[in-house]
Image 1 (spheres, rainbow, N blue to C red):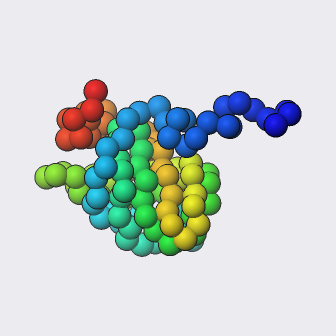
Image 2 (tube, rainbow, N blue to C red; image 1 turned 60 degrees about the horizontal axis):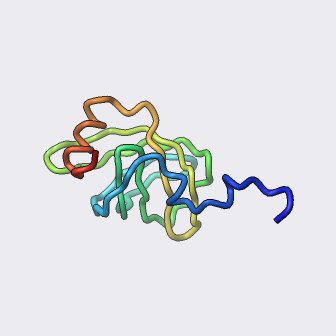
Length: 110
């Protein structure tokens, strides 16, 4: 593939900067033209993948509310991967340090 960027050739999983764990929780979200409830498929301190049929394009800002263990978290993010009709990958934006540490502890990741 002449002229292609080798960074783009990496899979979505290889581009993640933080580890994720399988965890299914409800997510209430608002983003783009959509509002809804989805389920996470996996989550980490840097982001999550949520299953949804909502149309959310890459680059769309999104606001999410989810319960992880005893904690209700209100998180901002941006869609970094979209699989229309199936789900989206979201990178957290401006994640509070306490929320990041909580997620790492709850998910038992370094």
